[in-house]
Image (cartoon, rainbow, N blue to C red):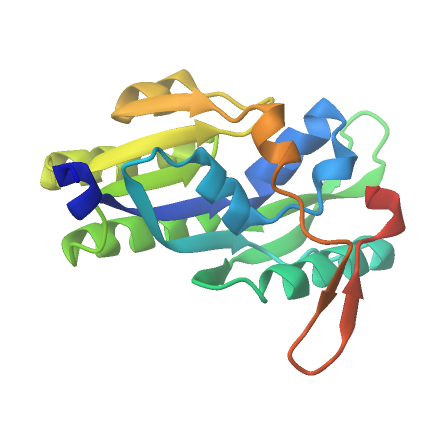
Length: 210
């Protein structure tokens, strides 16, 4: 038995839900939307690492109804995962108009996700809850909290796992190391077609996600 077996690195994962979703969407990988987030993280770990907790950050979409229903089904499915927490921001539609034709439209805007991630990762580092923070995101807005953790807690590591189709050089540089999540890891991390909740309700994978 080696020292790595006795003292594996403690890992907490922080998942930027929308960034991961849009990465999959960019690649056209709709069949992978029904993703077991916890299993994906497990599949990304090194042999000397142990996952303690996964924190998933998202917002409830405002419209349209069919998209709301699919998201609700997915959230209910991942709520059944062990050692898994969900943190909600706000998803709002901001009014816009075209200055040339005066056409009125709405632009979706997600709020609070990056603040929530920053608070959690810094708080967990301060309480010495992890040795490695695995951050799944490709958004450079997360550079400040990554730099803060590395500066305040130099013994801890921050690893960036970029979703498919997502990359930010400044985020990669700010971390200890980074890599892009490959298709093979994602394909091995899909939820069962049907999931039974504790109350007996049966969740099914949305047909359009197959």
